[in-house]
Image 1 (cartoon, one colour):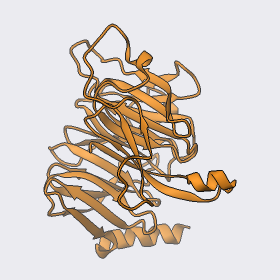
Image 2: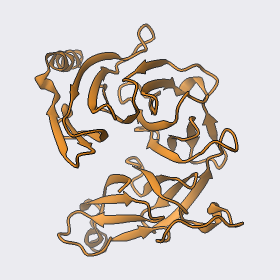
Image 3: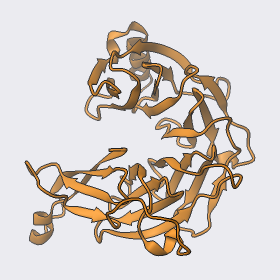
Image 4: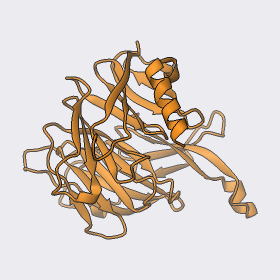
Length: 306
């Protein structure tokens, strides 16, 4: 898989019985195929997906028909984002240079946006898309064109395109303790912060270096602790509680995880200081970050503030 996104949706049995409170765990999977598969995680040894978004098949050849008219991706699905504020909506990005919104209730494509490359020779594959945690219609995306785009999905042509970075965008994350703060991870090892209230003409809030190799993924926990993972095989933790006086995140801790180049990470929803990381060795590593004294002090400071 190139992209995996957990979903919690009403179960088919609860819908039939009129009980909207009963939900099942699902996972959306994007691969080199052009379709997205939805699997029910509460069904053991399922033989086929619960639903398929788009038309399955190998990468399509370019034709005069635009991807918008096809209502399906025409190349690999590289990123997925479930909208927790509008739970029937899934966003996807693809190597076909489009971002699509899917209605999970009807398993159909609701909207499509083309990602226009900065120059004709610049690839515009979409590498990341993330919904704002509070504003249900706000979707950020980024990719090979080295630009972050913020869309109001209620308006057809509403898009704020921010200045190009020095390298492609690999991942995006919204800061849960600063609603207007968005962080982008770049292929050159940089982390770039934006205050989206300033619009696309505003300068970046900060640029800090995780290292010299690509930052493959980033994630915040609920207290504003930012984790970045890289091809350098290490995770770094940052204090993301920025202010106007100190907008740049301060490095809190780092650790080499021992699972090869790092491709994925996430904080446990039940334990926001337990971090799971996956790497090129095909292994999963868990890190109780509070074992680190600096992280423990960070946690204590957030507890005291609340």
